[in-house]
Length: 217
Image 1 (tube, rainbow, N blue to C red):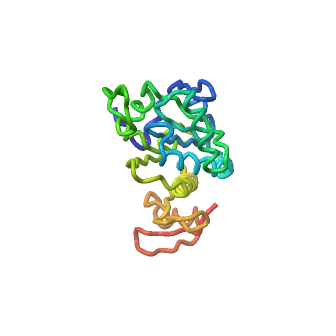
Image 2: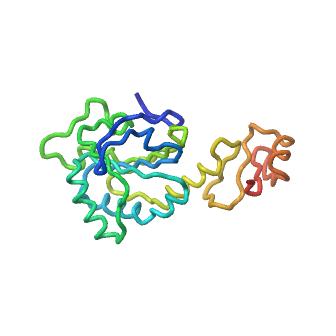
Image 3: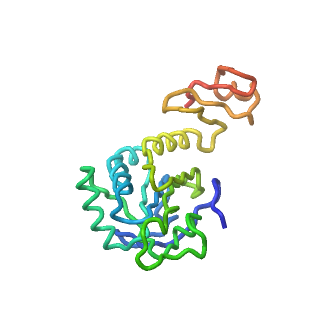
């Protein structure tokens, strides 16, 4: 079954380098980012884990938990974290799922149900396990990004997208292209002009269907 935006995230119990966790219990009342990788000790993935580690304070400010996923075992994860810290200068304190049985990768629709890891595998055998999921406190998937092997993920964009999702969460609002925190937001068409102005004040009407509010509280 394909996993789509607004679907409830699978509630799995998984093994990590920090012990077993149940995904829904682990998320709790927080936001969560799950980001996956096809193999430990690979160059692009090492830079990405380092980027996430360097943003630890930013995730905490946003009440967001981070969970790495890689289809290798716990002992490899622990050793790899030493390389990550050596490279980026920040300790990767977040857990990493040991998804060597591919349970999470399949449940999150990264790999087909009949996928398996061959002997002597390379990262190419699990290449599509390079995805980012942002999950809201209601446990529903809010965003999915999947990247190819050759392009490192931009975690500044993941952070920006998280800000936009939190800004518009359960509100009749949206963010425009290239939006940054503090900028005006778009009022959804679910509200007519009268209702929108009653809720958000005077609107900046660019087009009948494109109406901005001054970063309402």
